[in-house]
Image (cartoon, rainbow, N blue to C red; front, side, top):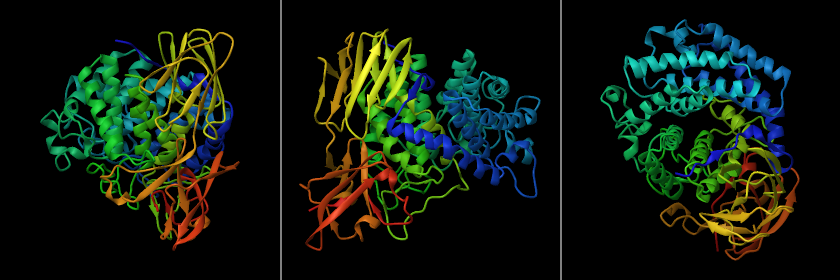
Length: 576
């Protein structure tokens, strides 16, 4: 079986362009904005594991803190920062010093109900543990300091003893999945295979045991516990939980060569992207349970499309690429990167969306600096900080190029350089020196015409070309603005179109166009591009109609919506 290997994000540096700007905002603004809000809301104080007159630790606060530390670790891996490291060390000291003697750590249970440990499946206990483990691995990798990792190994050892050896908890699998993929990361980081065995136990037992029966919500589909994971073919339930557990299933398929998990992942992925995903890459269409609904049920105004769910889908697709290099997976990551995830943070980097609807009416949706459930802000922090994780994989003498950005990388000793203004335009120059004989460059599914400077063979959406010794490979993707249509079963979008240019979904806002209710796009209309230095991509101008008369129209990237105050917004627009 051919092995496809990841390239660690810290081996790749974005040097310029769209994502360099976003990463600079992420480091310069978002990092501190989230830290300040978490300080104000006592999430960091809760690590002292005590009740206070001002606050009581919440069941998921540890996960918020952990994702902030993980995001900070990714920034430290790119560039060391003494002050940031000091902040992280202070938080880690709280965790280590308040950890129970047997290794247990959860600020809510240690403060509120230590006697209830491992008795309430729905209370995010193992979910928090998973995020803490991921943060500990990331921090050790970034700084070389291992106190946090050793602390979380003690916790993981306890969880292994309780759930794998003694089976003494009142349930067998976590109510909110996440620890499974974290345990695989921990096994890789430590070489301790028992953590991978525990992750596999959690996966194999899900929907496949009697013990969880007293803890299930309705029929169990809400947290993907309605049937064994290997037999699931339709994405159901809470979308974030689904994305995380599907990610772990793909990890298991790769690690253990498990064809049943691989086949289930393929079916679940197909169901999501073909039947349950918005054009923006958002998933989970209803706020009732933050969940998937039936196939093609994709309303615009009430779209929930949680930021974390889009990120979880990208993590799932990332792992599918390690099973097989198929452009569908990288296309989905790209869709999330530029739309469904990026819309979750404001252009200035300090305000956020929890849900990401595709249409709003006045007074419109406003961005917030913090939420009661504030999982999304630190999630977008860590996602942007480590976005280069999605750029390359390799197998033997073939380097796979999945995403495009001006960047430099070291891949197994080979020097890799991309020169491009993507996604402002579609020209990518790739130079590879040493190590690899072929480059396989993704040809995005949205691209109907391209040129490549070298002879190539197109396989599963990748152009395989021999790497020339003394010159760059130049790939040019045509990216005119275009109208896209929904599947006809999405009845709400009948007679409507969305506008895309390259990977970017565009929308209309009232500030540019007045009332959006009676606007029609011309189905054969031409678009003019007006480059925006602020956005790093063009605005689109066209002529539509309003009330039977021609009307000039301006479209902005969906990720830039709601940055000028509350406003009307539409992605899907009626056409002539």
